[in-house]
Image (cartoon, rainbow, N blue to C red; front, side, top):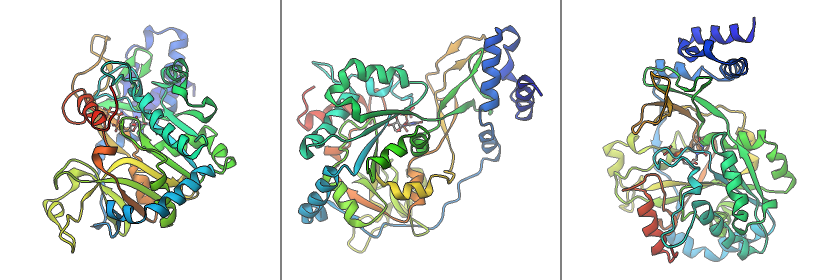
Length: 409
Ligand code: UTP
């Protein structure tokens, strides 16, 4: 069977022949590229849409122990000592998740290139580096920074760092790696075309970061360097404190394979994922999965039982990551705005969500591990996410929080 025949058969099997709508008008090289893309893409994800399988949750219960702000204060000295020691010994690396498309923010550039300054330029990437630099200066040695990008933004991201001289960070300690891509489709399950010779592909979610890091050959580097902990965090929280010595110390001393920074919820019905237990293992329940009863449940001290939301800042022990690396993560169907060719063959960028992407999420890795330390941080000091242009979790709200923390914009 030729490559073309193989591709056609696959398209027929999944009822996706629209992908070849312009095939006959393409140049030979374009035909070849499209055939290769079809043959290498994973279409099995489409069957998920048909099945509309609901993810079956296990028995959810509250966390039994959280390192709250009070406990952190009590143990500050020992956490700090342990954390600084681990950092000075080079046991901690950072993983910046920057492969997302930032569709809600709506910029064509990688989110990290967004300028949040008011009177002078201050880029999101720059803020992230500044925060990491604080720890580097404190412990007197560089920290390896692994930056995950996608095919869609890798070149722009690397060029941006080069042009800005890595914002003063030692480039020998910055390592880029590219995540995998997945198909995207409309609400009827039809794969979108991005161009006449290519399907719309999107980064496959932030859950594949460890596999992609490994596939890029960087796990060998991690192990050679003696890095035992990887701190994974989102690009869009501009108050992100990474490689935080107290958090590192607390997690290491707990003996748990992973720690998660959490914030006390602003209200019982706040729209954040909540760290809890599921069948005795750590897990994250999304806000839409919370029942009224769970929202109002109290613990024996009268505090809300499901009170701690995650902020996408996790410290994973590498040893346990290696044990779970081959296991399949659940696939999430996410509604997004997906750029595509319209009926006239013109590329169009929708203003509203118009279809589905398929994503693995880092939070599902938590559930694969035996336990997770919930480590509380002060929301206004550490959580200023930029998701939207205006309103909640926007550039404006993050700017206000930065100013509150004494950052000049
Ligand atoms: P979000 O879930 O907010 O997704 O990412 P996003 O793509 O950035 O933005 P929207 O939903 O399209 O508006 C949370 C973090 O995970 C990273 C993002 O870069 C961000 O740091 N991420 C997300 C990836 O690295 N890869 C992905 O495929 C998705």
